Every structure is written in C-alpha cells, then in structure tokens.
Length: 467
Image (cartoon, rainbow, N blue to C red; front, side):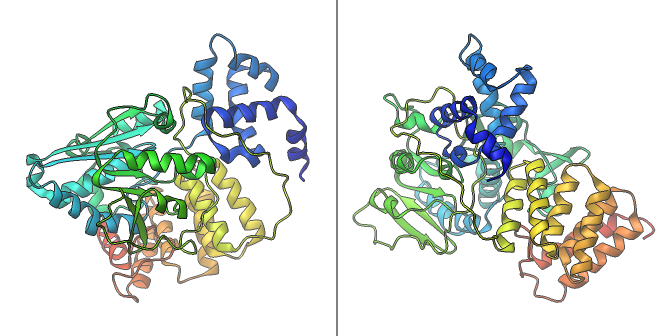
C-alpha cells in the first residue's frame, strides 16, 4: 500500500469523517477511495483555514455545520455531463420510447418527464431538444413538463442558465449547435429559450423517496431517467430506490437507468423491456409479454465517478456502510479501460482528476494513441493549449490515420489563430473519414460519425479566409 494510503487509513479523524460522509450521503463510492476523498476534503480545509480534519469535524458539528456540509457535498460531487450522452439510449428514446408516449398521450397532449440526478442540465435539455424535433410546430399544442432534480444547488443554478462549453457539446455537430444554441462568449454557448422553457429545475434528494413522507408531487411520470446515479449507492439501497422510482411512473411509463446499473433483482419489481443496445423498465403489467433480463456481459459496471445525487437532509438510510476493504494488488487494466477511466472523469468535468488519470495511464501504456488524444482533450479543457497540441501530435506520431486526432488538432490550431495549419489538419481528418461509409462511427468520437465529421470540416473551412 502506498505511504499516503497507509497514512489515511491510520488517520482516525479522517476515517471518522469518511464514515460520516458515506452515512449522510449514501455515497458508498468513497468506501475504498481515501485518496480521492482526501483531495476533495483538503479543498474545504484550505477554504476554512482549518488546521486538520479534527478541527474540520468540529466545524461540521457546529452552528454553521449545515452550511459547511452543503459546501462539502458540493465538493465531493461531480455533475458536468454532455448532450446526448449514450447514443444507444437516445436512439431508443427517439425510435421507441418517446413515440410510444406521444401516441398514448395524443388525446390529452400532456407529458411528464423527470431527470433524476440531472447535474448541470445536459440530460433534460437533450430530451427537450429531441421532443422539439419530433413534434415540430405542433409542440405548442402540448403541455410538456420536464423536471430536472439534483442535490447540488450550484449545479442547478448553472443548469438554469443553460450555458455550456465545447466539452459538453462535443457530441453535437456544428450545424446542430448553431440551430439549438447561441454563442454568447468565447467557447460558451447558451441554449435557445424555446428549449430552456420546457425544463424546470429543483433541488431534490432521491433518498426522500424512501422516507416516511415521500414527495407527493413526484408521481405519474411518463418517463424517468436516473442514469449513472444508482451505482454510487450501497446495493441494499439501490433495489429500494428502483422500486420507489417505478412507483412514480404512470401505468405505461418508462424508466431508463445507466448502462452500468441493470440488476436481475429489478426484474422482480418492474417489467424489463429489451431495446437495441439498452434496456428499459416499466411498471408490472401481467398482459405485457415477458422479456428476459439484461445481459450483464453487455452491461458491465465501470469504475464510477462521484455522482451529484445526494442531499444533506437525507433520512436515515436503511443500511450500514460496509467495512472498508483492504486494497489488494491487481493486474494492470486493459488499455481500453484506461481510456474509459480518463474519458469518464473528463465527462464529469473533473479535469484535474482526468489529467492525473492520464499521467498514470500513459505510464502503463505510453504508445497508445487514444490515451494521447484524451490527454490533449483534457489539457485543452484546462486551458493549456501548447501541451494539448503536443499531445495531439504524439497521437498522430503513433497513428497517422487517427482521424479524430487530426480533427481536434485542427480545432485547437484554429483557436490559436493558426488558420493554415488548422486547415491542413482538418482536411486530412476529412480525407481519412472519407475512406469509410458516412454512417461509420469514428473511434473515440463520442458518437460522431464519418459523415458528420466531413460536414463539420466543410463548414469550418468555409469560414476560413484565404486558406
């Protein structure tokens, strides 16, 4: 065990704080993540000028303890995501789930949707855009309520503004970005008001569903999305929460969980509906044809990043935190897992943690071009343009046919005002993408296909003068 881990494991005040965090938030993720938790706790110690964890524990139990607990919970949660995350689920929404809801609600023209653990709002806003596309001008005839709930008040304030950076919009084409957003600052886009107007946000706690007085207004939803939230709770709580979410659905409603979250036990509570690339849950209906449960070779749980769905005023959980496991040596993970770990941290907006993960991953696999690509993306998000450019070039040194590396290098050069060099990189990316069918998904492109990349390059090149 590393010296720092040994020190944290032996630090009784820190372990007491960790137990309090887990008991209060249900965030079982931190049970074996001492270093990650310490990095976040340190920020609060510095902000308060507390000399050590013992002093900080006194602060948490003092007169201003509730305010500090809220600040700590904000620090230990990560909520940034991106638009149209998990293309398979949005395909299921577009082709199956939302058409079913629209057909069933054709008479009363009323839809209720809940995005539980919405973070900074990309998920409910993505649903608003999708519904707007599907209904067109007829949307004015419908009463659409999309509710985004989260524990983190700062995330919700950001969500209400509807402002997003390039990272959150990386799966959105330039044409769609221009249609749905207005550029309001450098590398900042604001969602247009017709879409923002479909969504409202409020502070929520999923554990309230298990309390003695669950919220009465959270009921009769046509669709509930609770993605990448349950994986952070203790398994004894997860089944209760899924049952509670199912009870909040309309009779023919739909529940979507994250890709890592299906569990055979859920099939005892709700009907399982298999869809291409994903699985959905519905209230039990004896007349609905039974389907087999999800395949857990497909839905393998990744290492979770911290979730944002916890609240200070949570009811007492109906479980006890499991003992802190003793770390054991493990074999080096496959490169694909290393890339996924970096990508997941970056998706959540924790760029410093993503950068640290990159350094560790590159030490294990220094010749993997995908890791250098993600290294460049993270460095770019941190505002470190020169190192980001070097990382993209290392990816291309290792793989000259890496279309996404050429593309992102071109975008970076364009931002740095080097138009001619940017044009060369972008053209090369388009040429490589032209060697495969337009609908081919590009590796590490977050759903971007070859045709979309070529279209994006064409629009970018048209904007350049004298190139």
